[in-house]
Image 1 (cartoon, rainbow, N blue to C red):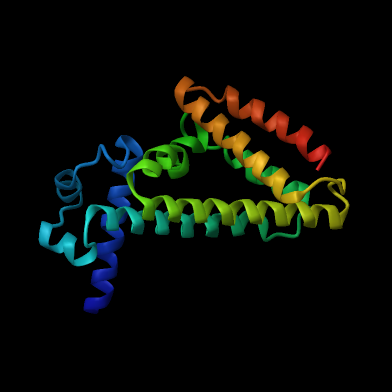
Image 2: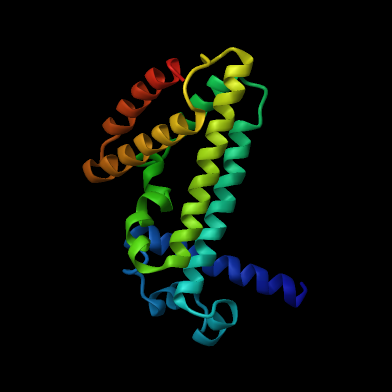
Length: 197
């Protein structure tokens, strides 16, 4: 195994362990010592990969946004109608092993408010990732209009942003209540929004 390959594996391992800790405790709640202990990486090695905890946070969010984009492509880059692809995406929010569905694995849900006040660089990365997602949803709305599965009215970006905000809020409520009720309500509301999209 080349040194470069080993370093990539180590970096990915630190990010994977860190993501699990951040999902449980938030970014501020995760101590650097805890991350080092859990990943089995010495402090000096950590600083070889990341200049600071904030730099680690930026890398974590960049990695998360890239992985989310790849999953989104798997859902959206199919031969299904625009409406079917959108509903497949929203139904994924209900999937998962917990009462909160995907909300328990979503770093936007977990960190959106926290990092907005903590790190401008981290905020910008997450905001850019969300903006890419909303633009992709809007593109699928347009594609759904083109294939006849969605009606052709309203601004697709405004509709996409409204739907994402609805689901983000529902995910937060689902985490608070430990119940998928808000997500199921969001699904019903989405059906209504798409009927007028």
